[in-house]
Length: 580
Image 1: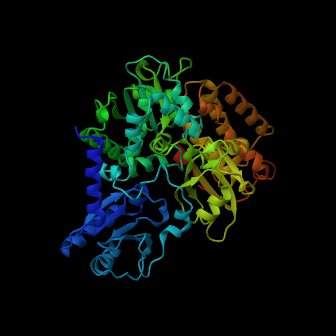
Image 2: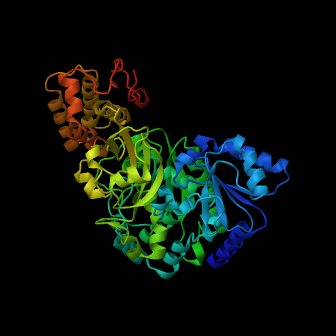
Image 3: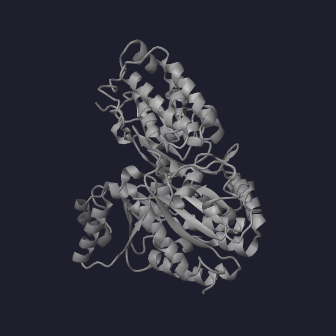
């Protein structure tokens, strides 16, 4: 097999052909946001337009630059220009003008120009790096997203890919890798925020020869899509991080666990694995060392609780996704009884850059014990929704108002829902809170996997809370009765309040049920299930009192019957704010 240096040389030659060759290089955002906005149709129209005009060009489907509101993004690197010109919200009808004016003649069309990226200015276009949604980002895990084709391993390698793995295997001992990860301060990005280096160290003493590094991409949180975004944009950064973790913990196998039906992430991850084997970066004696590692993809059905680490292992084994009793813990007894360590997609994706650049570099970014960056999925009533990787330490106000452009249509911000359905509901007065694991937890919310849903003045806190409780009730696996029955009771009560038919003592009853769930549930789903209600009651007591005491909904959102018929389970999609 070729050496890393030989692979890198081939990659750099191919990259030079792309960036300095005689043909235009066209990149189209085809992540989830791009496809949802019509990227497939735009690509088809682009291919047809180029073919009909006899123009030869390289077209690559790439990931997301973060500015999802501008998708489908199409960017063109014309030979000899040195900069990429971006066109926003491109439809098939826009393609002929882009091809005729810019690709053929070098002239800017009348509209759709978003800006340019690169060292050489393009007359008539603004510098896209100065746009807030791009300028305020600090991309580490998403460093290649939107810039390289996820299905081309050589583009990844040409941009520093697998350099961290090569350094670890050839210049560091496994314990050195764990120390570097520990010193970096990286904490798990799946929600629990546990120190990654310490978690990896738990498995070092477990006996081999077979041990597993598991990657969790279940990602069932409404409003969160950053894990899938990484797999669609740059799957090799996950594979590299997984292999670094495997080397550090003396593991032999890796499994990437993805929710069934998410075809983009699944297809691109499987293709990345195939290419890594083909080049010799996966398999036996990687880079000529004695380290061998294998990776495969495992799928699960629509099960939110499968994101819990032991439920995930059950799903991989083909069983129903339900948490296990602990001890034994996964580091001692994991998937199929072998020692296992589980991390989130984002967590692994930081590892290559931490090893390449060093722990001190990473720990210099962020604030307090929350080092590095956070990948924020900004959704809801927001001017510029998107996928933004920002330094830890920014305030919620900076993220919502400066990066997201604030609430549109002249309306006022009322609330933020953070951290997924088990997270918290914060008021507009919370905008000074920093993106910091500990500070957000102390405020009654969590950063979780990074989803932030913005609600304007027309959103009812009771209605939103009911939606969250309905989701959590439906997704309870039912294994332990505190969660199974507790979520049912919480849903019944929030339904009564939303219908303005509450009973005396309902709020106290919810608190009692929530405290019981928190103390006695088997996993985080039940333990955190009361969190949204607790935070909503803290910040929006007036909304609840209006429903309970005045028998009215302040926004008019809570209308019509809500409770599902007996002996049926309400589906989360039936519970939509404002539905009648």
